Image 1: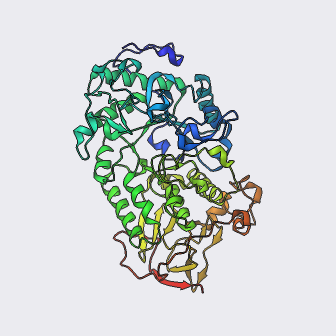
Image 2: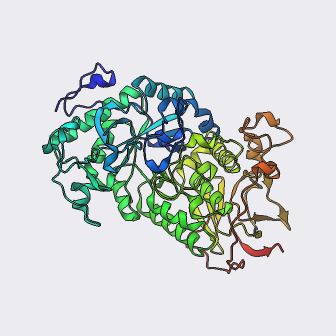
Length: 558
């Protein structure tokens, strides 16, 4: 096993076990970011390509130069970082195998060569540079648990690099559910094959992988890495690997158990928040009467168990999950999910296409060729996402930023169906009332500020010295002190010229897009659920000092 760092254009030499730190974004800096996740092969090509037949599970032509060419689209959405597919050379599998091609990037062959389907070293560096010139950041997916599948009866380890002998792998065995040893030492199944499992118990293997990631991060100025299949790796090694990388790690520990997630966070700061993802995907469906309370309970558990919930990745879609628009066609549910991802606890992560409410159940339907959608900016969900995300950026860079980034949400449940999340001077109101023409009223008797909903730029009305919040058609609300919204240029004010507002170039009036037929949200599917919402006990946690004397009434618009 020989290492050649020259493959990354480096003239440095690394001694085994000696890894100097790389200066890059730490966890506190990543809390400020919002991440846009792309499958490199499916986002944007740099050249004309044929129609992508996703059913064939082959390469469709997306590459790093294509991503660089469409950074305007991502940045106007308000995202400050991108997470791209694994970049290393993949196994090439004949069509007769029935396995499909490694267009996704999760079947590595050679760690020290880049994937030629995605581009060259120069083009990857150019993507990194283009992001940094915009003040954006690069997160790269990394696979260190396994190599790509074999399609013959006998495994040929000589094709892999640098682990080119059987001694670097665990003995073949099947993964058995709920058995920690088998998760870490056995082969992940892959259709009619399996993925050779790298033996990360070996010192030589661990040191090689640590040297590799250090050199890779340095060569391409990577700001963060996402570690695939961490559940199949020893926690201690993942921690060592992240330290060697010298950058923030977002770890895929696929577990819905808050206890397990939070136990890992004692060693690794960043993890995908699968417990909240699972609860959130169900919470905003109007048919799920207990969904909001269940989500609040999960958030409360994580808050009590995890060292820092604010460094967990907050998401509801990924390349492994069915898209939300395939779970529900209700625009209110889709908008509430987006608002929760962007404004809830943790680092927001959105999977490409969620901003267009793309449909797609399981693989390959959740992995379309995005360029065939035309990168539309006048899609209402694109606009909705950009308003919230750009507000988050403006607020974080204001005097309120520290309070928002350092505080976990105070949670209050109203009538079982509405949840208020307060972080600093921001109150996010999400619900699962659905889009069935309901106005949900609640009044607040003692609030420090006069509030405005930054999504609609409508101020909260005052009646009898009480502020009356009205949820229309199940839409979420992002409430912020009115005078601060005017000062930041988030909403129009007579004293602030329109052209100075933060979303210049996205839309000229936040209060009017719904009147444009081209920006109207799709009509929801008929909902047979009884529109009456019964009173429920208040959740065990309340919003401190902000919400007092909640009086609830529900008005049906006939």
